[in-house]
Amino acid sequence: MADTPVLETARLRLRPLASGDEHALFPTLSDPEQCLYLSRPAFESAEELRGWLADPKWNGRTWIAEDNEGTVVARFVAVPTDDPQAEEVGYITCAERQRQGIAREGMVALIAQLFAENKRRIIAEVDPRNTASVSLLESLGFAREAHLRDHEVTHIGTCDLYIYALDAPGLPVSA
Image (cartoon, rainbow, N blue to C red; front, side, top):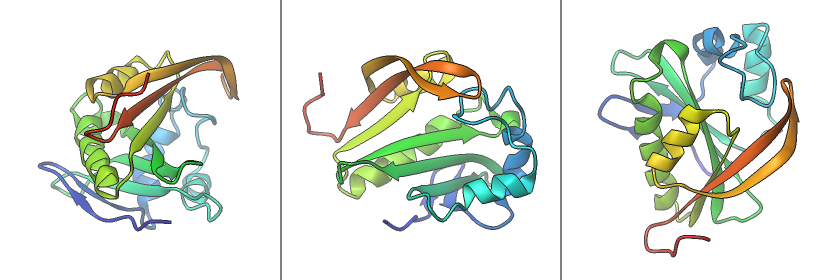
């Protein structure tokens, strides 16, 4: 697995996951409304969240975004796919910092990092009802490549799934 380098933006520092981050993320990830579009229900304890975040069997990378005061404001992930030149991304912004451009700023940094690592493609999966995430991906240039109906069973039932992709600059856009 690739390293998780520190990424800097105007307002954010994205760093690797550290012990204690579960406490900063718990207020958001314990809220059923905030976890509506996750594949699992809200967490019941910070310890349960820590086990999930630090699962040694998970093959992805986690970046914790801190603002200029050192407050944790979001989590970003990149996960290898079957294609070694493609990674899947995900993100969640802490509830009290939503609608402030944090997800956009962090995703711009993460996209730049993945393309700098010579990835040719970045993929994101999103529940079509998650309109904020759909809007963010589309505004970042991701193209919706698939709408999978009744594709995933989650804690809220069987859900549709959109698949978005962003090709590295200079590559043709996928159909």
